[in-house]
Length: 597
Ligand code: ADP
Image 1 (cartoon, rainbow, N blue to C red):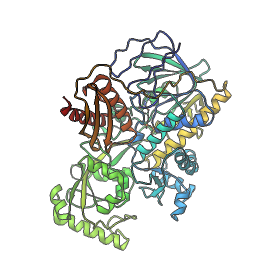
Image 2: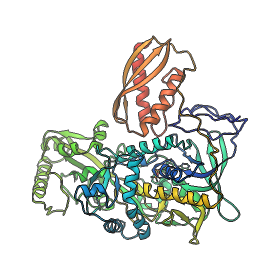
Image 3: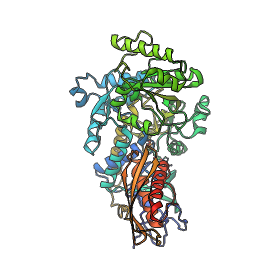
Image 4: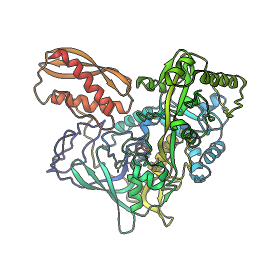
């Protein structure tokens, strides 16, 4: 009989890949691994469950694939995509048209090439632009929400499509993709790292070697979609290709280590633009929170520690980053007012984290951040004048949404950090991976940040999400086409047994029966839980109120809540990649249980 376990920390439908007999699998994050893993097979293996990987897998199934599996090395899905704050650049769309915005594929291509210093592969950029309106529709069709169009750096017109509630795009996208992946019953093997691509004697893809908690094994497959993201979190690799970035922080999640690029290179894939590494200009230097470009797009300015503006804040990321590095301490303040705050829900997270200074007056704000009050006042007055006149005579900023005169006033310290690796695996417009000899490697496809060429020397805000959805879809479609031409689809071999089962106590608890509430501190601020104790056991934990990031939150909730109920203690592991949220849940439950002892 086939034995399929559900991982305790599974986000949704992640299962162990062990479908054979005589296998034992860990059932919790810290269980001892005693098993010998067995080889598996699938028609398409997608490596990486970020935005590009989940999109590719969904598209593959939508195109008829029946045996697709995603392997993901982290305990949660979402990768770096969940951190994406901006939106998806697309042109021309019905949303733009409704707002009277005149845009075109040509202008999108032109802006992207200009932003990328013409280093971009123009064919890839054209493919990106041409497929962009359909990408917005696709996301919306699978349950997403991209309907508000805004202005972002490097775009000639309003082109970035964002959620209607102006929240960050990544959590919305990842939540949507997670749901669709679950609905389509696509197995996601979490905690499973791809180590090596296996080729047959003819040089075509024949499998991938992976390592899960149960050991190493091979998944035989006809096609692989590489969607492992970039390498911003691998400082050795960053410094190897761009030595001047030694010592820089990163905005990326811990899994962005360039594995796919290394794996692809090992089997002869060509790499392009590896030295093109982008820093994001506005990142909190203490906790690496990225302030979305939307804050500037919606009106914020940058001032240095002398209280003066120093750049057109809407210049491209590389230019703004460089300008900040030239200021005192290599830092600046992002300054905005109530109107900007009200225009962008995404900023609330910064307030929840306590990283924004506020005051009713500009002088008060200056005092709090240690900047000369009269200089800041002059800077703000001048800016209000430029805004009114529609002419920034100092720095030539074009889009000035508000005069920044509505109290309260806010300031957030920022500095550049490594954000996006533009280079990577060379692909063609079908998302086929190209070898050093200039030929497509049979059965190998790639999409998203792992690839190089789309962004050239500098990625524009809104083009990463466009990249992952558009080339994610293309790589999924191309993989299906390849499978059809090479033996066709087969029945699913790695089966989805069930969603995470209801957790049940595995030991007797020792609490007073009743219903208790408690509060803890998560990533987004305070969160409240309700804990039900019956027969001495914690039987139910409900999150009542929280401001945590969707996409990450569900993983933390499922992992920690299930573990606490099983073990009847809050002394359980946090979920890697969602540690602050899971820590907050643990704290809240512990506080609730204080009166239950
Ligand atoms: P993209 O934006 O291109 O989708 P993301 O960073 O969002 O990139 O997602 C890439 C995903 O790939 C991450 O979830 C990351 O943990 C995963 N990943 C990276 N390397 C490996 C690997 N060797 N095996 C499995 N998954 C990997």
